[in-house]
Amino acid sequence: MTSNQQPKVWVVIADGEHARVVSPTVSEGQFHTVLTFDSDSAHLRTSDMVTEGPGRVHESASTSRHSITARTDPHDQAKHKFAAEVGRMINDHDHRKEFDQLVLIAPAHALHDLREALSPQATAKVVGTASKDLVKVTDHDLAKHLGKWWLAPAA
Image 1: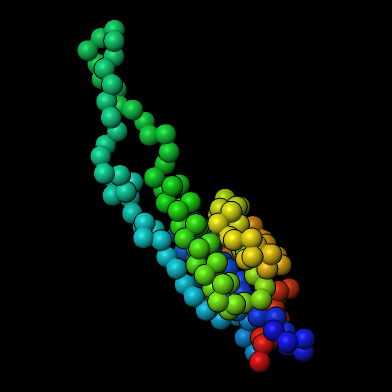
Image 2: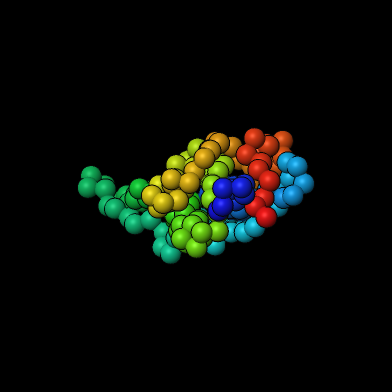
């Protein structure tokens, strides 16, 4: 980036199952989608995510049996994994110098996981964060939520 150019800003909008990267357009306050990502497990039921049912234990005082509940929720695990994948993707694009500044928009749990997945170099480019769920907001309607991060795109 030369001194007379505006920095290239990428805004990562994510939740536990979907993510997209938007960037400012030439039109004041408008954004357009650069990349989109969807989790493989976005619409799966728990029974589709788990290969076997919970294990069984025998009651020592009687002949009854009880299932063992899982220690972790498969949906939560999938959301953590997806945030890590999005972070790796952002790291790859940072390595190729495709953006100068980064803004992260996600619900609190996803925002934390996303920040944890970023490399130190990509983290250094983060200029803003917001704990919001804007995944379903159209590009046209993003201006009212992201206007303070709009910068004219680099020529």
